[in-house]
Image (tube, rainbow, N blue to C red; front, side, top):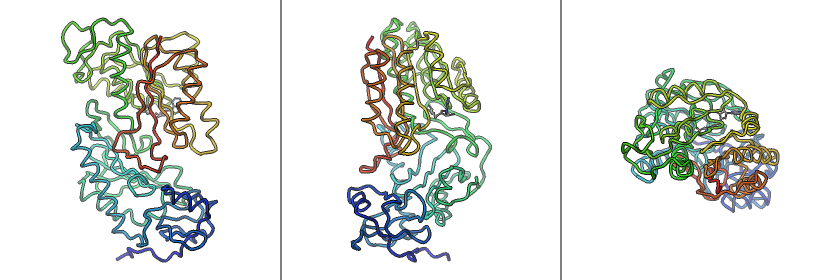
Length: 439
Ligand code: SAH
């Protein structure tokens, strides 16, 4: 039997700033605030400079995030605690499926474990149809992965579990870079549904865990806003209504019942589309055309395949740098009734923040100029280092420079299977703001 207790590490002392952070409810202490770094990665008690106990944490000698607190008590961390955390995370998903407001009906791709926000530092588990995809960026947790995968397999009975241990951040914790089968078998492709549309996803090679699941509800929000607002402004005629009544103007696409309203006058743009979640939901809502822009050919192909599978009009696919593409569209005076802008995290590190804000401003300024009167813009930032108030400031700056007046129709985060932990703003990494051009 492997030891389930890892009590060999002596207490790790943190300075006043580190202790204040933990006292304020944040789980992390940065390396510069650690007074006595551990000799190796593992679990250790954490104390302040006077020896006051602050809790137990996953600790690392060289990683920037040197301390990731698991609890504030004095009980050592053992495997039973990690398994209990996993059970709680899975119980939360069971509850979400039972909660109509969580929008999980028919969803077969969702996040089962959301790292610190589920009390398991660095650990991500996504369900993609019949399989589970695991990522881990915390060295202390690595020796316990077999037990965690065992519990996942027991409770979720997946066909297979694959370790996508190929994120660059693993090197920061000295962890090897590999893709490894952890349980069962992994087919080359799996079907993943968001409750309305189904994508074919490669769990071994797709970006991140193979799919971006966090925007699921926002895809619908943009389509619904376009139907309600942009459709009216486009002069499409009939007022929004559901049920696909003949004569409303919108083509009746397969499975479009949820959004069958009159958006037939809308041309839409999905910039940084990946699998086209925003764009395809706009087509499902009856948009006349959608242009998907992404730098990944594989992502665009998957989007086109999903459109064909559901009998939607084929989206226009543009494999390009979206920054350049938006610039060119502005020069050509293009206009769209609905736009999504969803770049990858532009601020991957805190010190990138200023440059990232300039990037978000440029993208949004151009998108705002491309909006038709009454058009809707769904704009996203998934940079954990950029908080929502700062993002809203960037958007206000962009609107001023673009010379557009905009209403904020709504502000949202990730779908609820990506829980947000109070006191840990990094878990509210995704910001999605729905805007409408006033004129
Ligand atoms: N909008 C998607 C998620 C987008 S993730 C959804 O809702 O599911 C970010 C996407 O940006 C990835 O697909 C990536 O391939 C793409 N990307 C990254 N840099 C890019 C660039 N400079 N131009 C265009 N696409 C880019």
